[in-house]
Image: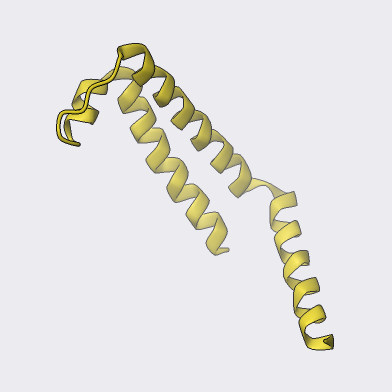
Length: 83
């Protein structure tokens, strides 16, 4: 359950910063001491952050990811107790 919260929190933060870099890169980068990059680089980095946010949301809501984590936890606990 904790993994789901971490993925959703990461998705929210990545999405906000990604949109900020896409639409207002100078304002976002100004928070970090006046850094500046090329506008195209800012937009590409913002798009990558938005893509990361989408992947995090998909990972948090995936039934297979939840089932995989539970079954892995079950198998790893049985192997520890048997050895």
